[in-house]
Amino acid sequence: MPKPAGKTKKVDPFKTRKSREPEAVAGDVLTPPEDVARAVDAFRDLQEQAKHFEGEATVQKDIVLGYGQAEYGKRVLKGMNRSFKILGEQSMVTFVAMDTSSGLTEEEAAAFGERWGDKVADELITRDLASIRFDPEVLEANYESVVEALQVLPKDVLAKLFKPMLMKARPGSVEKAKKHVKNADDMHELLQQLKIRLYIR
Image 1 (cartoon, helix red, strand yellow):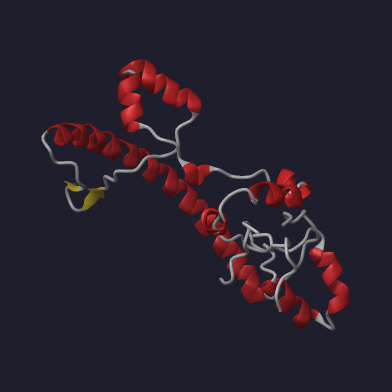
Image 2 (cartoon, one colour):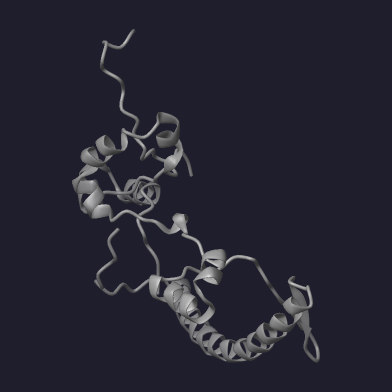
């Protein structure tokens, strides 16, 4: 059916990804079956051990990383800007070198420019456009206005400008879901399909 003259369909730049929550408040205490109770104890014990070993591993990792960073600086000056292995007495680690960086703030970029000069900063630093994020509350409150304002862009640009968004459960969905299920199994299935965040800590 042809569209009426002068009426063109708006391009919604915020497409939804085709495939692929509130934090729980402390509540009641349940007494589970024996096997689950044993699993709770084992989980807590292992979690405590993991925290201890993680802290110790971080100390050792920092020593190795410091050495690797210093050696990498020397190697780059000799034309070797790739990853390398560092031997231990019984094992080894790989020092991974990637030509990418973590995000820099405006202040960090300015400090870099002061130290190395604006010309060097311009050559080595650029905008990280992938880091741009909308404030979701502002976007939600002004969705139609934002879509309307973006219509000045060429359609092929607008259609590809944003990566597809995901959907999510509305706030309060768990409480509202009760009227849509018949039993606990249905509720369990519904919560899984909504990907409601449920975890232990």
